[in-house]
Image (tube, rainbow, N blue to C red; front, side, top):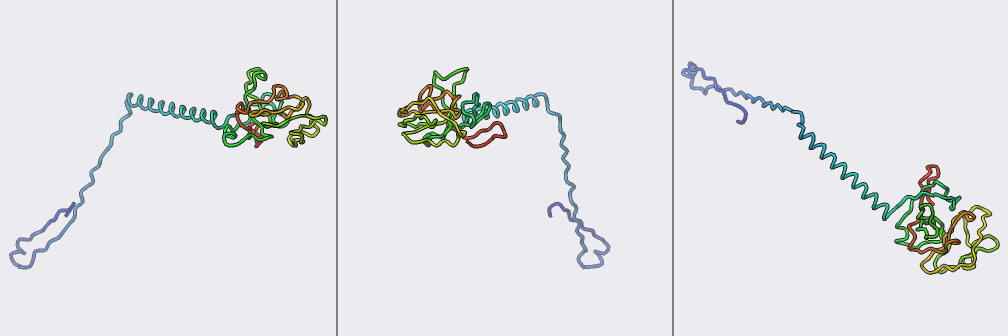
Length: 224
């Protein structure tokens, strides 16, 4: 029997007088569990140094991974832009920040009315500004013009522009044919925008992406 011992009490005189089996009794004794005492010692200087090195390496890897992810997002997915001028007022104001979707035109075509960021033509660059934000007005093959009534006509048809304030007039735009692979861009602030009326249609390949949301200021956050 595991963990127990059998103990027999024998009375010698009773055994001689009687043939009956001698009485027995069983008792179980449990072994006392062995107590294991663990002694903890303070980490040595070498152990502390190893822990610090391990923590430093983990932080470096974490920061590096975050930077790589941010770079991938900025390069291929989304990028934030600051609006430095009033050429898109009232839609976008100076100081606004917007997000640009760089994948929009990888899977679809540019649409008239889209607000896009594009690489500024050499003659339109100033003060370190390499990108411009404007609205797409003319598509490849379109003939764009502003007539005496102050409205834009595309291929002899009036262009509906609900994003402009009432009474906005567009001038300085004789009939212009948009070449294949190009876009005609204009700012919503028609009297204070240097756009395709100045530097001509831009190449579609110059488009960075479509502006789809304003992220600053907080009270004006919203889709565009």
